[in-house]
Length: 327
Length: 288
Image: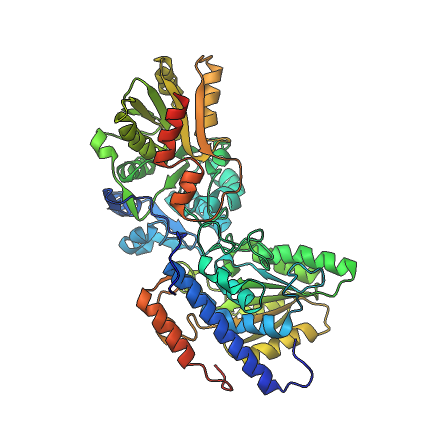
């Protein structure tokens, strides 16, 4: 074992960079707390409670947690049954398994009857180097096709805390992407407050407008700091709710004009935030070009996450480089 | 394949030696990462030894040979275990061991068919192997071909509905060229499998589904060999299953003792200790 260590691949991806402020398990801790005053909340998982931070809720409320085993169709159908009986189930697994394996059950058993089930899933987009079986590159595209479904892609620990509470009180089915473990914290520095269905200008600027959600809002804000040193002034419009899309706010920001407009997402370029925004702009006759950054329409490589983020253009450095190449 | 003149004792000795080598390769790969599904690799090494060094027909220099027995790894996270067997079989060069789980490697952490010679299917999402095996078996039978299709699945994978769809289907089609192997180590992501979703009595279930069923100690090479030989030899027009009860971390007592071993982290010095302990425990001629 004297060979030099090559870059490693890890299933349990850590999004947090060196020295970044983090909060431990914001979802699990928040759910455990708010459940104290909301007796209808129950938690279920398909053998991934430890990997979705739901184990924290399970430890706090053992009589309100249901381990369903590694059976995702069962998980969501059972959650539907519980919702029919008046509960507010939070059901967790990885984004790939909810969006692919259990889709029919989410579509028909949950959404078609507008049931109050919260589908909360870890490993969104490209947040693991484990390979396509675990990289949920197209979850937003899949779920955008479901009527009645609210879709949330939160940026950081603060937003996950606020969104968890907001979706618990929202009546109707919700799909929320989840970051777990030590989750970065940054939106507190911007005085940010989450509201379902609202896009918010987290940072203003006159040269570039990033329209982003989730992880890419964090990356866009970091890129903005980098580009500021080169006197490029970058605005970031954070769009945590993918469905329903806050078209009014987005188009108003495009309408201010005179900027390089970019939509960027931790998702394939097909069918996610980018195409949703482009479609809205086109329908309203917005004239200026809008660039798109996202994962390619391909089965992604396995490997180390930093390598993959550079390779597929969603690292902070890659974002900054694209901006400069387009200006 | 063994020569007719080998005694069973010498066959078993060789299989135990191979199993120890498989365990060693797996430990070395896990050391590259510092963590991983190594407890599973240790528990299944005996089964893989019997499969690759006694039972399966294959050509090391031509892993895609048409006439091969197919060995499907339905449990993609056991890639580390299969790579160890493939290295021992000469299908993957030993020098590639150090690239395990690294960028641009042919040995990704989760088994994928187009990355690695000898990897028949892509795993990661569980419950795929058995249904895929159904299709392969149907085609092979229609062609009148003699290869067997083996599918290794886990006890956690029994939770997935697709497993039981395939179980029904295999018996329905009388797929006597299908041999399933279940690694029952009673561990999955959230804890002991029997507490996540109970599946006992397991042999009764497979039997009721119409499979020729055997259940053995998966770390007793003698018993595993007998079961595998029987699975190939029975003439009933039924699919075959060998349920193997195994011990996570088998061969390295301090890893066997770990309570939570689905995905384990080990310090640098512990890897060296594990290898030392593994070699020290190697006693040819004795049942492990």
